[in-house]
Image 1 (cartoon, rainbow, N blue to C red):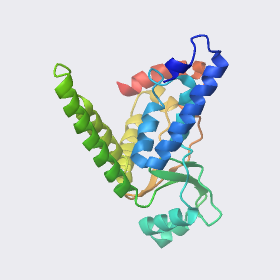
Image 2 (image 1 turned 90 degrees about the horizontal axis):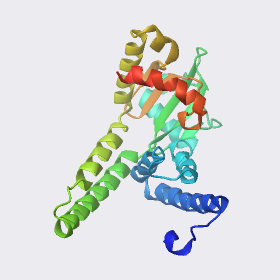
Image 3 (image 1 turned 30 degrees about the vertical axis):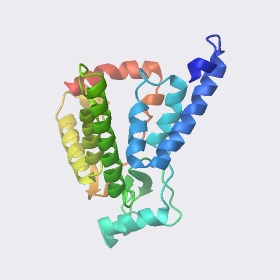
Length: 245
């Protein structure tokens, strides 16, 4: 629609403002639609080849600045998951505020009874049911789209259903914090047993406690890669390649 109403000579500043405004509307719509759609926005937020830069900045807020559930609700979930004794050791209370909130959960920073600085991630209540419904609807839509494409463009290779299935598998995997903890422990062991360059350049927080809906790890200071300076990213590329290999 913009191509019909906006001239090719539109100033860059006006174009960026227009794109940012549309991105804000898209972000708010995704939040209102539910966690699976927020995950879709998160996936788009790391695709500069698809989404223009002004819109990327807005969509990245879906990674850590979604509306949080009330702390009382989050703490009740933590107490149920960890048990009263382990929960009490976290020193979290009614005045605690999350440092980040995303599609499936939110994170608190706290100091434990034994003086350890930790990150506490807790899943949103009822999120599994919400994700299930969202993914079911997306799957039905994908099958409908694929059927229409098969009728009007039979030569085109179908991909809609497989794309949604891959997205769904990833979203489901993120709901299991015990699986995340297992992967984190595996990665930590691999780094500690790896080359000296990896051991010096990579820090994997140690897992302190994990259940399906709660995860406690050591707190690590750092900057988001998306907000890092180009020079920093350039230095990290060889390290990333080494980790991948």
